[in-house]
Length: 208
Image (cartoon, rainbow, N blue to C red; front, side, top):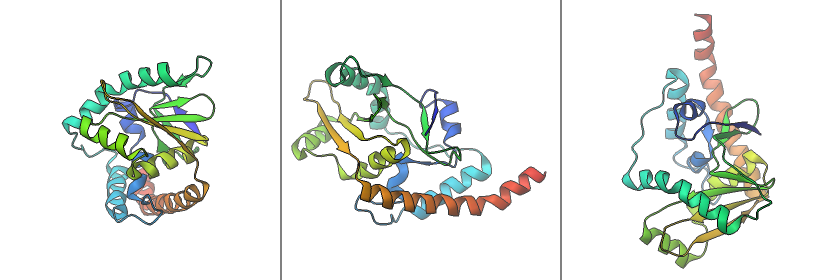
């Protein structure tokens, strides 16, 4: 794992993610049940365009998404106070690359100690209530969490849904080695095909 220390949502962070397959988008490559995602072709085109243009396409951010970004710091502090022993260090990072190729990444909301990580969601109250009622991590986040465990090599990842004034919802997710193996194969195959498609154009650019 290679760590890039920068502020998430900063220009440096966005630049570092250009044409890079990220855990938050692994669900566009593999479904929560381990099948190929129907969104892979569209995601491939997006990363291909980034590789050629070196510019990211502006994505729409809803009020809910902006709210989640704004609340993340408060949620992280709450988690640290309530669930993190004093001797366990929380490390805020910008980006974690799988290896020196810098083609596969995740952006943890925090690394926790030597073995863990944290994924924070700050949804609206009704969605948070649904999480509390279900009592399990929403399946849509399985590719992201298991993918983050793969990229970082960590042993567990805490999923946290946080809404002030409501009961907290924190569940620990352990590594699912079978799913991670399948995810790794599918993401690596996706990245290899993307790299092969981009290579002639990037070489042409270098040649001037």
